[in-house]
Length: 491
Image 1 (cartoon, rainbow, N blue to C red):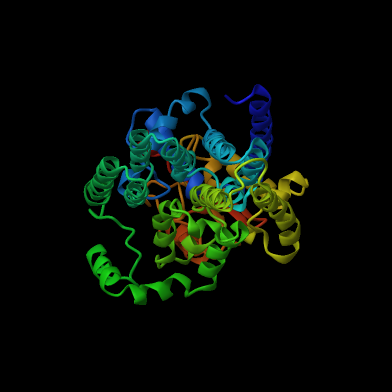
Image 2 (tube, rainbow, N blue to C red):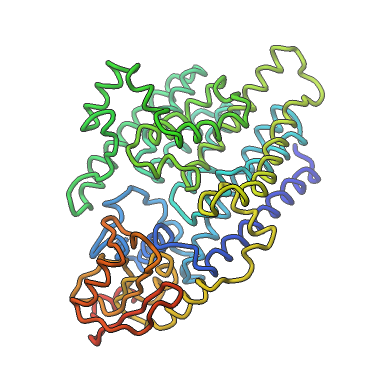
């Protein structure tokens, strides 16, 4: 039984983090730092779910069904939130609650292994650690559901509730199509703990779930009729070719994991602050598919540290580090009283988080910083800049029901009342408003246009300039009525 005072201490930590997350998220939105990719995409999808429609997302393209892109039906559970507050920011509120809730299984596990003090420091550490900061700085993404879920999966394994672990792990299949591989890793951990039946059931569930998502559901809804994210050409031209390569030439696959400075930075940022301890815990196996799928990927963006990918990995590796400390403590026979390393480890993470924000503001460009909350708790982003004010003037010109192709940073502010795409994603016969950001090299989307291409297209289609070069933003319009597809999209 956990004393009320200790629960209140945990609540205070979680509340403090939630307030900081909320302030940062709202300021990002106010300052037009949120983007169509990904907040606008998920806003359009969940809003359609809330209206009992298919998740058609014009930001991705005309008639684009989001389940043909990734398999994440779990986001539909957020639809009722739009009945309360019809606004993209409601998704970021959900993101905050999901991330904050991950502190609970972390606290319970570390408290059971060590003490309240170590557990409270661990909860604070995970909430301030760079993967959580990067996630809040990215806005909502479906992987947020997996962050607390994976913590509870490990908790149930530790509490010797293997069937509950199977059920919770199976829910991950609703989060993203590649979670089937994570289920296989959880099954391996269950097998190591001699829960043979549960491991077998979960392994089969993972394989079937992976096949259904990638081989059946996504191709069914995809316009191309296939899964579009095979980006592992270093391993092979197809999944079967990659499997053969990994099984027959694993020694040739290993160098791929560290063949770029970003990959080395990613591994270093995850493991070195944890003293490499996760490598000695079986729970690190659960993180392996998530980490390896990124390191083997061809796309440079998935190796970066500033996106949403790492929060779920951070929970696993932090718990794996504490698991290793527990084993070391047991081997040394010091099972009573406070175990200092269990408090020093999370305290070090907190110190790195606070110092890292202060240092990186002078040594890295803002978009490359992995401790972005520093900008909020030091007040550096409290006032909107010239660009934010120019964005506001631009979006204020777009009428309700318009067919608008917007700048990526303007899109989330338009999805609530317009049919919004990015440059080149909407039907040319329908689009009647444009917001072009001439400061960007590319204007977003799967096949992005350059500003020069967007201006040439606008001239070809007969657009006239309404606002010219307002802090780099151009608003253009052509005098055609709003298409019924656009006006009916929000109804």
